[in-house]
Image 1 (cartoon, one colour):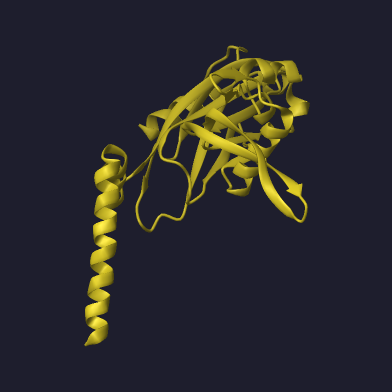
Image 2 (cartoon, rainbow, N blue to C red):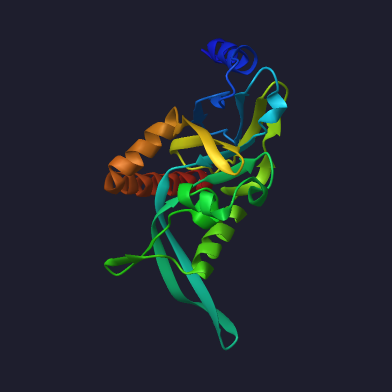
Length: 252
């Protein structure tokens, strides 16, 4: 399959005479298995842009790659100083925030297209369609809480905006590295590539990436999420048994 993709990339970049932009992408691995020794993963996204064979430089292009992980409920708390101590004074809940979000590009985003284009397609953290829940209502988050969410996720290496770059190679080929930390959430990821020309999106591609636990880790994960009560009870029994056994061995 990888060989066919590479052949197609060469075909659209070298053979096709049409000046119409065309985009094709692929990942070095579409499935990441998390086991006990997992300490992160490095993937390579490679792609090709087809342009006119006669004068490929007459159609300059830019590429933006967005990697988004599964959404989850996230609580952000605001601390305020009361006397000499700091306390949680206010908190809000993001009912559906991405557990992982990364943006890489061939240039700075503000050099590729106007902000209105990124806002339309939800590209970049400032334009993610986030809402917060307060009671039974939902509303747009305050900028301070949006920035706090970004800082928290970035501190865990789960948000990477413009920390990585997309490298243009020869004949319309490009590549970028995707960094997944050891604490990456499990679930379905989407790797989306946008092709820009003259500040407008000309084409886009989407690839699914599966990040999941395997082996004993998967069994424990499924047990914990499928039967949380039994999982908790089992954990208590195992802990008590281990303590009793340690006491018995200690007396000997």
